[in-house]
Image (cartoon, rainbow, N blue to C red):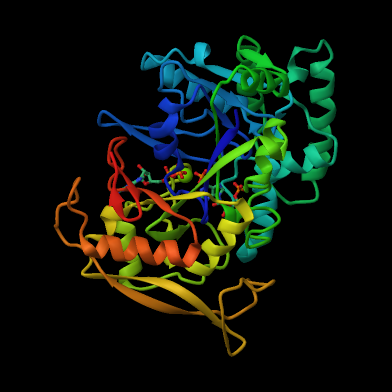
Length: 425
Ligand code: GDP
Ligand code: IMO
Ligand code: MG
């Protein structure tokens, strides 16, 4: 068996949670492979909205095991809150969740360092979710990190104190007031709870499951344009978000990657600072934000809105080896008579569909292509409005990848399966 992948092709919030939840019933294991509680994945099941930050989006499916992989960074406080909320709703989380011992821990002082660093940047701030992601990955690559497996060691507290004290001296380079005591207490008590969960050597677990023919779906967090290497650096997150990270974040070889399902909204959003070539700083952007309810699932911040960006999607498709596309938020376009797509960039006096090295310093304008919307026409088995067929065909031709699914609402079931622009059962 192979590991299929679902990931975001834009700046995050493409609707990964909804799509993973929907497709999860075809898989036995759903595995997060990177990122941490900076993610906010929204699922709407039977009218109830849920937001997951660290727990994979297969947790509501009976018969699905959910793995938090080694590439993820875990804040015990957030994780425990998430577990308790789900348990209160009757979800048997402990039976459905396993955690890689190699996953790195977010310490309270990582969060303080994140906030201190952002504050010191002033107007140049990244717009981080302040969940401690950057400092934790820094400690991981700097070989100072604490891992989930370490909490079982007798000398865990010694290791913790050592790292905490290192952070406390680092924080002194910033002029930043903080309060550690309460956060530390909550964190240590969450660590005690974490010990009761299934902590595993996940690489062997995954290999065994693959050998036994189990189907595995890897769930990405953030999006390709936030990738630490290939995103709009430095306005990115601190992990690789592309499909290559599935190998390092779960411990599998490239040979074991199967389908790569890329998700894009029918338009584009970004939360936080950084370049956004197709951004709409006008009433259309405002309308997209209102209609699409574009407010961060983790921080509640308003998301910046713009049109779908074909050059960025082309880049994302080849970086990830995308084999099929899901387009979400189609329903939001219905509020308009027409919508647009950024087909090409213009910079340095030339047309291009390549992202320049320094997107942050390059003045980019976009060439837009306009499309009519399909108004209130019905979309059902034998009736796909021509306007939708035209849009699908344009996207497929531009990206050279088939559009397999389109999403028409936040609810689990509001998803239509297409092949070559026709609905399939
Ligand atoms: P994720 O981080 O990629 O999982 O996405 P988020 O949950 O942060 O943001 C996506 C938002 O869009 C959530 O509020 C979803 O409930 C919502 N959503 C997903 N698909 C659709 C759709 O097709 N239409 C509408 N209107 N909302 C959607
Ligand atoms: P999901 O998985 C959207 C953005 C932040 C900020 C930058 C760095 O829900 O799609 P970080 O907290 O990683 O230091 O923030 O990345 N960001 C996201 N934007 N969706 C996310 O996750 C994001 N995770 C981080 O807003 O600009
Ligand atoms: Mg999100």
